[in-house]
Length: 251
Ligand SMILES: NC(=O)C1=CN([C@@H]2O[C@H](COP(=O)(O)OP(=O)(O)OC[C@H]3O[C@@H](n4cnc5c(N)ncnc54)[C@H](O)[C@@H]3O)[C@@H](O)[C@H]2O)C=CC1
Ligand SMILES: O=C(O)C1=N[C@H](C(=O)O)C[C@H](O)C1
View 1 (spheres, helix red, strand yellow):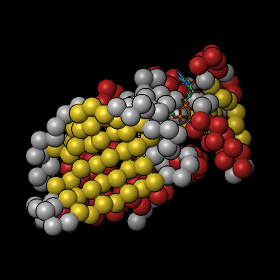
View 2 (spheres, helix red, strand yellow; view 1 turned 120 degrees about the vertical axis):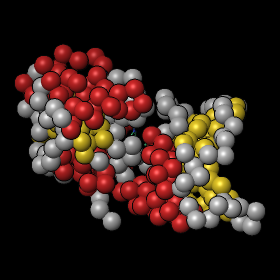
View 3 (cartoon, rainbow, N blue to C red; view 1 turned 45 degrees about the horizontal axis):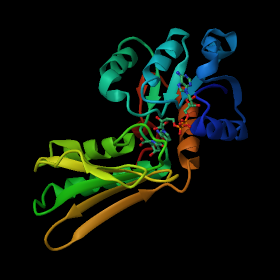
């Protein structure tokens, strides 16, 4: 399969390695300094472009790829609030294809299934409150993480007494912590911690007077995210529309 890479940072480089290892051809690599390559025949020849860039540029990259008739797999986070509706319309009504996941690792797909199941149980046990924490490396631009938002939305979908999530505490790379919002009873507070080179830790904690129940996913490296993105590209080559991780990993 012919793959174009948009974004050649930590994820782009690891995806290149895994894609080549699985026998794919990398036909184009686009980063900030060669945007003109969007107009190259090599980019247009790609079966799929894999996009891992940054919150403020991801949407523009989807538009550029769609304009050249190239399907996109993207893991960029932090753009959904501003552009989610547009992207949904383009992929459900205008024939474009985007496979987006806040987290491509099979471990988080499994963790999400457990999260949904646990939340359905907890809907009946009102003595438990729920909170979340995500820990990531100091280079991360957005908070809370895309994965934390996805997990929180799964919980609000299942627990009647929780309507929305809010950013609770924010811990900066220098260790200072600020309380951004005090969660209301119907809100899930998410604490974001930026520390060292942590690839990504997500924790969901239910607490009652009697006890607590905690589930955690701890990524050992970025490799699981990158492999998942390449598997998603293989899936996207033969599928169309707005695709998600639930289409690919079925439990
Ligand atoms: N969904 C998932 O499984 C995962 C998602 N991510 C997300 O992916 C994104 C990228 O992560 P990393 O690779 O760790 O970041 P990074 O900062 O190492 O790499 C980003 C690259 O994008 C480039 N870039 C910036 N603007 C661009 C533009 N307009 N066009 C093309 N390239 C551009 C930068 O120069 C840089 O090389 C972040 O939003 C992060 O949250 C990261 C890991 C896993
Ligand atoms: O920026 C990262 O590194 C990651 N971003 C994704 C997110 O926002 O959830 C996925 C993963 O946790 C790593």
